[in-house]
Length: 301
Image (cartoon, one colour):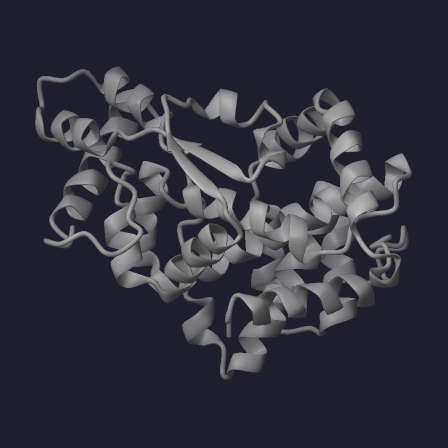
C-alpha cells in the first residue's frame, strides 16, 4: 500500500471521527488526546479503565511522544503515562488537502493508545508478582501482554468495527474491532472466545509455531468457528511486534524489570504467592484463572 493510499484512508478516518466528537468533553477527558472525548462518551469500559488508573494515583502527562520512544523505554513500569496532545493538529492536517501525505502519516506516529497503556499499569498491582527466575519473568510479561491485548479486543468489539476501525487507523486504540461479540450466542461464549484469544496470544508471544497454536487452542477450548476466529485474531498480531519489539524491549530493559519485580516482591505479602506460569502450553488453568478475574475486574462480559 502506497503512502498516498494510507494517508487517504487516514484522512477519511479522521474526518469521520471529527464529525462525531461530543460538544462537551466528558469527565476525566485528556485535552487534545486524539478522540479521547469520543471514546469516553461511547465506552463504559474506556471510562472504567480511566477511573481505575486515576484511583491508583496514576498520572497522565502531555508530552511529545513518538511510537518508537514509547515502545523502547522502561516507563511502562511506572505509574504514569505520557501522551502527545495532537488532536487539533491531526484535524487540521486531515482537512487541508494541500498537506503532504508523509506529514499526516508522521503525525499519526505520535498518537498514544492511552487505554492500552492504562491496562498495563492496572495489571502490575492486580496480579501477584512473578517468580524471579528469568524464564518465569519472560512468561509473566508475555501473559500480561496477552491480557492487555484481549482487553483491547473487548473495547473495540464493544465499540463495533464501524467506529473502532477509524480509531485504530488513527492510533487511539490498538484493535480494529470484530463482530465476535454479536456472533457469540451468549456472554459465556464470548468470554470463552476472549480466553481462547488470550492463550493463543500468549503462545504467539512465547514464539510457538502458529501451526502448533492452531492445534493447541481448539484442544483446550473446543472446536467451533468462534474459537477458530479467536485463534486467527491472536495470530494476526503484528509479526514485527512478536518477533522483535516485544523480545527486544524485554532484553533492553531487563535490569529495570528485575529491579521492579524485586521491589514488588518485597512489598507483596508472602501469603499472596507468586505467579509462576507452567512451561507446558496445555497447562492453561492458572492463566485462565487470572484472565477470568481480570475480565471480571474490568466488567467485560
